[in-house]
Amino acid sequence: MKVELEADKCVASGQCVLAATDVFDQDDDGIAILLEEQVGDDRLDDVKEAVAVCPAAAIRLVEQ
Amino acid sequence: MADTPAGPVPQAPDSPPGFPMPREARCPFDPPPALKDLQAKTPLTKVRLWDGSEPWLVTRYADQRAVLGDLRVSAGPDSPGYPTKASPEGGEGKLSFIMMDDPEHARLRRMVTAPFAVKKVETLRPAVQGIVDDLIDGMLSRPGPVDLVEEFALPIPSLVICELLGVPYDDHAMFQENTKTMVRTTATPEQRGVATREMAGYLAGQIAQRLAEPKDDLLSGIAGRVTAGEIDHQQATEMALLLLIAGHETTANMIALGTLALLQNPDQLALLRDSDDPKFVAGAVEELLRYLHITHLGRRRAVTEDIEVAGQVIKAGEGVIMANEIANRDPEVFPDPDRLDLTRDARRHVAFGFGIHQCLGQPLARMELQVVHGTLYRRIPTLKPACALEDVKFKNDAFIYGVHELPVSW
Ligand code: HEM
Ligand code: SF4
Image (cartoon, rainbow over all chains, first blue to last red; front, top):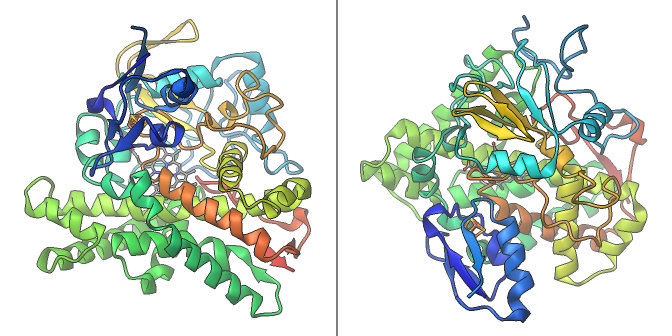
């Protein structure tokens, strides 16, 4: 699956970093950045959790 | 019509239920029973506030998140229909972007997001551990009992936010007292106005100093935005005020109320005391946030364009309240919701709100609470309340829930 992040919407809550540390980080201003765009099955649950807790609906998982 | 709210709004005949509702004295950690009954009965209902207005109350988790995530609602107390907690005149004060809508909200919030990033906050952990250890040493050097609020819960977040902002901690008595007045529901608009102005005057002075001579602190960062012409001195002051208040009062209440809840649930306390797994401690803190939900008077918004909630249209100009404390007890999301269970996965709670206003300081609050609850019971395994639960004064008279005092011994 592919992860999409709309950085414009991000409110720097840090929730995605907590949910999926290997996939998300924050830039110097606290805005989320993607470390990996493609996630395998082993990361899927963590990314789903990030999607669920993101307060700004900035993260999506898309089938390829 | 009441001038100023003073706790629960009583039920009147032929009108919607009063809000907020009284808690059950015997269950001080639970939301008001009438509120939970409403959740079981209906997703959406009208309530009556202290000023006679009748906004909507959203009772369930999914609907609350949907409304808070919707950009057609406004957090501005001046928006038509906004359900106020208190008389706005000299009242709630201007608290910067927490009361604004996008795009201005986003513009201002993004000026201060940097120091709250998860990894930035992590670098402060050793310093916070030092503060917590020192305060525990201080308590243990005396015979007890001590008031955990004064001696532990309040100093921790106050020291941390002072360090971060660059506010001298020596002035803590001034800002802690004024904050207490600002969040007390029974304060008159005048009292609240005086407290707000004293704090604002103080912070305006601090910012003026940074304009003249910048330091390496967040106040200087905010002052830098004034120099750059992005905000004026007044906006900078309001931003500092929001960060100072939000930074200490909430976390302090979570520390004291959380400790009391654990002392009342010794089996759960034992899990924390016996664990040295940071992951378990982090999960336990999420569960405490869910279970206690201290920002207990609901997230409040005014609807700016018609929206649909639970099959019903809420019209532009109407007010809507999301009672997050019962969202965190929604059985659809949290099985056996009224049980404090530190082993559950509570990460989806809404103790920090939801949507664009979700707490900016949450990584900092989490880290402070992890250090506190991961340390206190290990260092003082015999910690116990020094008064009966019935004698503890709970903050039913404040916008943020907690305990006024908590005498403890060991
Ligand atoms: C356990 C402690 C805390 C709790 C339970 C808490 C809770 C909340 C909640 C529920 C909101 C949302 C308000 C709304 O939607 O109307 C919020 C917003 C906010 N909090 Fe916290 N908070 C805590 C600690 C902190 C700390 C340590 C800071 C640090 C400065 C902070 C700064 C803020 C700010 C600036 C906002 C406004 C965000 C915005 O409007 O975009 N909070 N908090
Ligand atoms: S969870 Fe959403 S809002 Fe929070 S940092 Fe990640 S992308 Fe940004």
